[in-house]
Structures are given as structure tokens and as C-alpha cells.
Length: 165
Image (cartoon, rainbow, N blue to C red; front, side, top):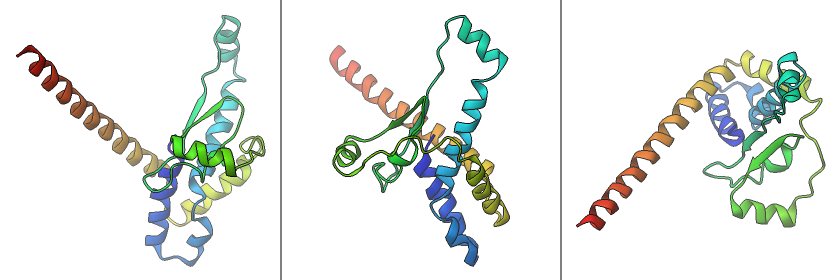
């Protein structure tokens, strides 16, 4: 989940509302979303369906947090989305920075769903819906990956054609 991208998109919408209460919610949407998703993840591991899969040898899938944005390599979020069964994808520069500067304080997700839900409700009260933000980010991400794939495919085709000549 692109934690930083959620914050960027929601913060832009909050700024455009020009509501004085919006400043209290700046930079909170990504972490709130991660905490609510983590709660859903935890609940899914308690279902009968999961217990049957686990008994058959299945292992739980990990949640992957993507913390980096165009303006932040991930250092702002990495220590804030820590929980069992999760992984944070970081750029090398962020990992090197965190290795020196950040002391991880343990689980930051479990038991935080009430505060996260309050953030979501506050955003909704200002007209910023996370469902809409998620749909837009999903569309953007899907098209971005498709564009990268097309670019990569073109390079491979060109190199294969050049090698065949």
C-alpha cells in the first residue's frame, strides 16, 4: 500500500478545502489507512476459512507498505508502519538513513484502529473520502505500471531486433 502517496493525495485535497480544521489532519491519512488495513488483516487470520487453509499448510501473506514518494524516500513512514506480518519496501537511501537515525519502537499498528477510524471520519467530514482516493491511486498506479511495461517491452524489442540484424 502506498502510504506516502495516500498522504500526498489527501493532503492536497485538504489544502484545497481551505477549512481551518483541515490542518489537524494533514499527514495522517496514510498511517490511518495502514492501521485500518492491518486490523482487517488481523481479522482475516481469525476466520474459519483461514484456519482451514492454515491447517492445510498455508502461510499468511504479508502486507507490503510502500513508503516512498517522489519527495520522500520513505524515511517518514518506515518506523510508523511496523507490525507482525508486514514488510516495508524502501529505497536504499532510506534504508541507509534509517539504519543510522531511526530506532524502531516496535508495533505501531496493533490496537490503533480507533484513532485511525477517527481520522477517516474527520476526513469524511471535510469531504475527503478515502475510497475515492484509493480508486484514483489504484487507477494511476495501474496505468503507470502498464506504461513502464510498454516502455520496457519496446526497449527489449529494439535490442532483439538489433541483435538479429
